[in-house]
Image (cartoon, rainbow, N blue to C red; front, side, top):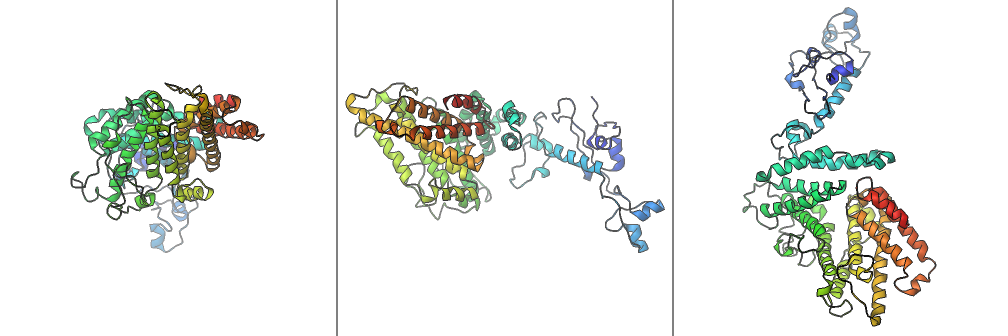
Length: 538
């Protein structure tokens, strides 16, 4: 199959397809970018840098009027060529400096330079300097950078969701965008086990996110274990000095240390979500994490050190008192720790005291959840002012997810009052004298589900950021089930069902859940089948 280079295609002339640059491009002294053959995987791309061409005589694409009338060579300099300057005459051009066909060829060549080719052969690792731009590294280095490939794979899906039409979303085109980069990244991830690094662990976290998003749940499950072992091998679960790691002065900066902490906490959160309270699936023990909680986002961006100034306020791990320097991430991790114990409690109801007992584990966890919410600073409350403040710092999605996680944790704790709806290994038999307690638990589960629906309704007003997490589609589906089950079985307090506004409120909440699932279907494979199920409930 003969395609020719980009320049010859733009000029609509025959190209000899010479591997090291065609004759036409060599004569015009321009870069020759061979168009890909066959399946378009970029494996045969040949790019000749303009610096490799002889710079002794530049190609002139447009001559001035006087030189063209005199039929002599024009230097093409702007605003006046060399010949007109020497003759002290006015020099003028009647066309653009670069012809249209060359602009098209250079545009195609620039796309080819910035496109990582997932099918190209293995290459050396990319530059570790974070300030190095993509234009400063070769294409082979970009193709071998596993972290860059995963970022491109995830970014392609969000870019496609933003620019594609609704028909493309229904066809699943957006979810397929960037999959070739993720496949290439997965190959590199498991072929470089002997050269593991912080970048490898970062790529594993992002690849887990990608696999969940496209529906490869078995792959995401295995990558979780791989990421946990990487964190243990790299010892990022231990707070150490720069000397113990033999870091350079630049590598031991506050931002680098904070990045290592945030990477470890990301792996901890990933393991907590995969474990879901099952001891056999949970690989990380909180007692083995000896690092500080993430600092304030502003301090992290400005690279301000909080290690010495607030050393007395910051405790290692999740057990210390909360500090004023903590922000969304730290409060979220405290909530994740409570959520782990909530899920474990629900799965081991046969080994605990009855929930209505004063000293039961249910009351202890319930009090911890309420204390967590009461200790939230005013800047993290779910209010309009807090949402707009966080939106200015691109953190409104994190604020929405923080409160959804809290309400869903409360739902998971109080779902013991709806054993027929959820899969609980050992159901609790509530005696007749505890009917008031049972109705209270059911009402609380319903109220938290209504709060989640209101957060979804507010998130829809602010774009995709508040609905980006892969877990939210499951939350929206479970919330819809609870609302329908509560209304159809007349659970909870009888006085609530006497209210004529209850059914319209439930319908409005179900509508918000369905709209959120439709929005999430653009970037999550699991949301698409849940949309039809939720529409049936609605």
